[in-house]
Image (cartoon, rainbow, N blue to C red):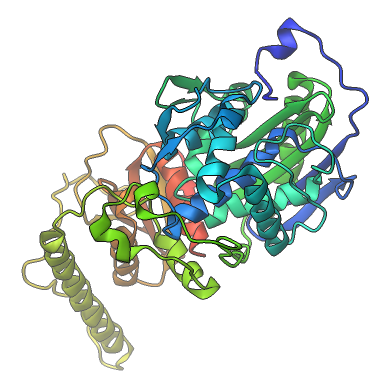
Length: 471
C-alpha cells in the first residue's frame, strides 16, 4: 500500500487504469491555483491515514486518550497486509509509536490499531472519520477503513484530500513535523519515510502523505514552504513513484509561481469536536492516566472550547513540573517591556512638541543589554539591538514576525511571542533590526527545521511569520 521510494527502480509497475486527478492550493488562504479532475471520486489509498492521524491528534487533545496510552494489538490489526510495522496479536505498544509508524512508514497494522484504540472497532472509527470529513467540508469522501486499502465505497477526491492536508497543517501544527521526519522510532524498530526522495530533493518540502494501491495508482499530498509562502499539491493516479514525484514538483512550482509573496492568512475553521457517537469515552485505565487524574479528562468538549484550546494544545505530559520560578521570571520581563512602552510613548509625545529638543530615551533601571563589540559605521549596515544572548550553536536560520514603527513596539512583540512559543523559540536570539521602513522583529539562531516549525505554529494562530535564510 505504501509507495516505497525504491519501487520504481526495481519493478516498473504501471497503473494506466488509475484515473489522474490533481489540485494545487495556496495553503495560507485556501485559494485553488490549479485543478484537474479535482472532484472525481477515486481510491485515496494511504492518503486515508491523514484522517486517521487527524482524529488521533483530536482524541489526544480532548482527553479521550494520551500519547503514552498502552494499546493492545488485536488479531484483526495484526493481520493487516503490508505495508506494516509487524505488530503481533496481544502485543502492547504506546499510541505515540503507532502514530509515528502510520505517519512515517504508512503502516496498515498501526493505523487499524489507532482506530480500535480510540473507537473500539474499525467500523466505529470509520463512522467517526466520515463525521469529521463532513464537518471539514469534504463533501465527496466516504471512508470504510483506517488505512486506505481498496474497499468498495472507500473513495475521495483531490479537492477533499487537499482540504484535509490543509487542516492537518493548521489545526495541529504541533504534530505536523511528524510528516517531514525521514526516519522515526516506532518502538519496536526505526522506520523510514515513504517519500524521502521528494523531501530531500524539493526545496521547502515538509510532508504530507503518500499512498499506493493497484486500483489507486501512486497518490501524494505534498506541502512545501518557502519564506512566507506555503503551497499544497495533490496527485491521484500517478504511474510510478518517480513520475508522481516529478508531477508533484511541477505542481508545487506552479503553485509558488502563482501565489503572491504576502497574503492575509485565513486558517481553515477547525471542525467541531464530535467525540464518540455513543458510549463512554476511553476510561482512564485505557488511556494510561492514573485514577487520581481521572476527573481532569474532557469527556465531551464543545466546538468553542476545542477551538480555544487548539493553539496551545500539547500531548499530556507524564509529570507536572514546578513552574513558579519560570512565572516569576516571565513577570519580570513583562514589567520591563511595560516600562519600555511607557518610555516610548513619552518620547513620541515629546517629539511632537514644537520646541522639543532631541534627547536620548533613558532605559529603565535593571535592564541589561548584551554587550557587542563596536565596529566602524558602514552606510549599508543596519542597526541591530540585541536583547538576548544567543545559544544557537552555529544555527543560521531565523524568522521575521513583523515590522513596527519603533524599536519598543518590536521588542514588546518579540518578548510576547517568546513567552507564548517557548517550545520552539527557546534559545533563539531576539533581534530588532532598523531599516528604512521601520523596525523588524526577528528571531535568529534557529535551525531550518525549527524556523519552519515556529512559522507553522505562528501561522496557525493567525500571526505573521516568514523565514530568514542564512547569508
